[in-house]
Structure formats: structure tokens, C-alpha cells
Image (cartoon, rainbow, N blue to C red; front, side):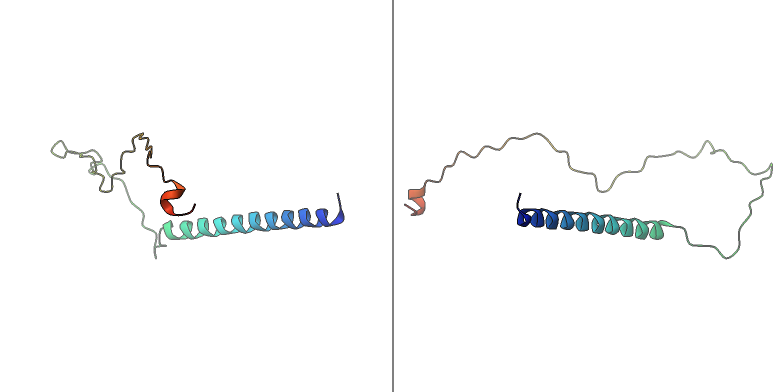
Length: 96
């Protein structure tokens, strides 16, 4: 293996390492932004709830829980094969 080949391989190795590290840094930044956006806002004073015997924690019988309807339901993907039988010959295109 000539020194030129070794230099070319070394260059590609360096480029690959640089691309991998920049990709990892990018996704860490995206994760940090998501974490900051989803974090609850800090409150001014902590609220302490006191439990008493008069507070009912159960659901009354007159209340019915209904499931949440999805608005953007994903499309159902079915297996479909598309076979194009239309051949374009070179003579039709004027190439030959």
C-alpha cells in the first residue's frame, strides 16, 4: 500500500469521525431543547395540599369516562405491488 493510499484512507477516517461526533452533538442539543420545552415552569411558591376525610377521591357514578378520539389518525398502509409494464424503447425517444 503506497503512502498516498494511506493518506487517502486516513482522510476518510478523519471525515467519518468528524461526521459522527457532529451528529452526536446535534442530537444532544435537540434532546436538551426538547427537555427544556417539556419541563414545567417553576412556580413562585410551593403549594402543599392537605388531605381531609371530606375530600372524595373517587369518581361519582354520574360521571362517565369516554375515550379520547384521535384527530390525526395515521393512514392504514396496505401491501400493494405496483408493476409498470409500460416499456419505453430507445427508438421511441429518438436516441437511436
